[in-house]
Image (cartoon, rainbow, N blue to C red; front, side, top):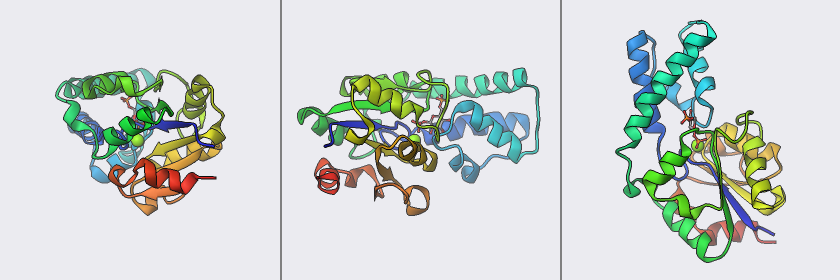
Length: 217
Ligand code: B16
Ligand code: MG
């Protein structure tokens, strides 16, 4: 029986991928690194430190750890500043409606994001009240595809993985949900999240009615 829902943030509740792109692009331009939208796609759902390593590998660059941390912090400062412009109009279409519906139906709801800035994003969206538990990049040390963030969220909700559905837009996010034995809903194209239990192109199609009808016992 489904009792809880665990949501990824970027790509499910709101599209921060565009802001991450702008910030990585700015850093890359300063460093004379190649960075484009195709490479940005590879950063979907993975942590900040894993992201900078993907970008450096792509550019054949290797630097000492302290410099890498410094550069990742620089990118983060640019990203965090850009979050100031985010407003409650920036939910992905359908996301706020689904969260509202889950609340009115009495489901438990948690966030399971890799971002260390998730609290700020939720505040900008005025979305904090939708969540019983906020699991983010500060909650666990092993990032997706490890299931830790979702296990943290379900444990805090007091639910077993088989009673929870994870919503994810990233390939590694669905891998993480599966590794933790959660039910999964993929948001996005087949080639990215086709391995989820059920997939919707966008959050707009992922209504509670549609989701419930797939997972009913
Ligand atoms: P931060 P999610 C992820 O969010 C993003 O998809 C990913 O691109 C980003 O690198 C990661 O958060 C870490 O974000 O730098 O803010 O800690 O999809 O897990 O909600
Ligand atoms: Mg995501």
